[in-house]
Length: 210
Image 1 (cartoon, rainbow, N blue to C red):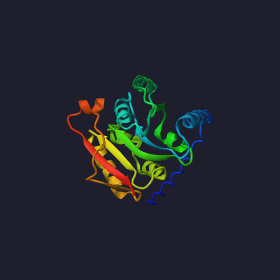
Image 2: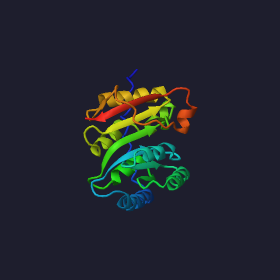
Image 3: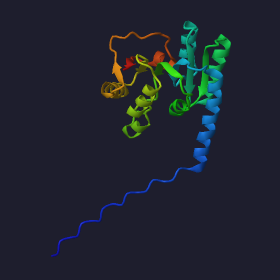
Image 4: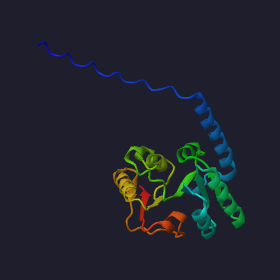
């Protein structure tokens, strides 16, 4: 009996070309963000950034307690951002702004010279199923993008009630050349979010830009 010939190697699937309509929407969103940035950021500005600001509960309280800090919160949900903007208007905080934006697009569109003073990510979506972990925002490339817009010593504050996600982020930061975990650094401001109020327990982490 003749030996069976091996199966031919699988042909790599060519990547699909980018969708022109999607690219057009992205560019339109970048243009909108750039217009907002021209209104918000003076030249060489440093700002406190909350990613996933929700209804603006935490950042409104933070901005009120830190009137000298320029604070910007972003969320992808337009309803949440509208609620946050109403909070800002009611509090009459000129140092606070809320925008609907995806975090990566926001970073990519930032004007040259604008720098992160601090970053907060509080109770982000943990995407708990393993096959969905790729959707988690906090990946090595995102920490690289943050580092490129952060000065030495810029703090990154992360809080979650999801143990697996916390350990994953802790490992990413421990291995990242641009960040170091600061286990003794204090949490700078307490204003429990809605998710924190519902959580039985939570984990907090502070990292600093090297």
